[in-house]
Image (cartoon, rainbow over the protein chains, first blue to last red):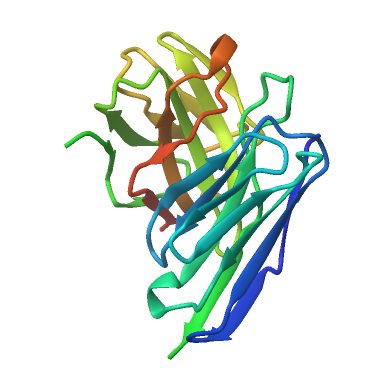
Length: 112
Length: 117
């Protein structure tokens, strides 16, 4: 079955440093979605990328979808303490009725 | 405000007991989902439903049951057959994508934390 891997599993950064998490799927995806879950909270949808090679920005966050539509990345510039949480990628296999498969997440800690 | 309401927030289950987790949405979404999240882990799909009176098993359906009698409601029952029920349960909903596929962004409720007594 489809597998979605995320690395790293954990990341500690000093406030102001940059952060990147990577997402890799075993199968081609029809789209890639990113979610953020604050400690003790629920996942919140951040963004969806659909096109091969697509890049989208949300303030300090940059999202990229790979050319082969099997990988993606989320980059945060100059992290802030409000960025703390777990970031999940999720994607449905292309050409399939299967549901979203979530990655295992990257837990970000920002040290003040 | 539109959203998803899960109740209760915390639930305790005794040995051999079935418990039901509630999930209600007023977003007029066709698709609803139940996920299980264990500490430090990702989300695993238990069941999903794309239309009233129809639902499909996810990756870890054993020991769980659901119903979808109304578009707004998708309750999950954790049966006594689920031997390790302690987890964080999340309900979500979404619109359906092209060809009725559930590949669209999902909105989540606040979750229910289930523990064994």
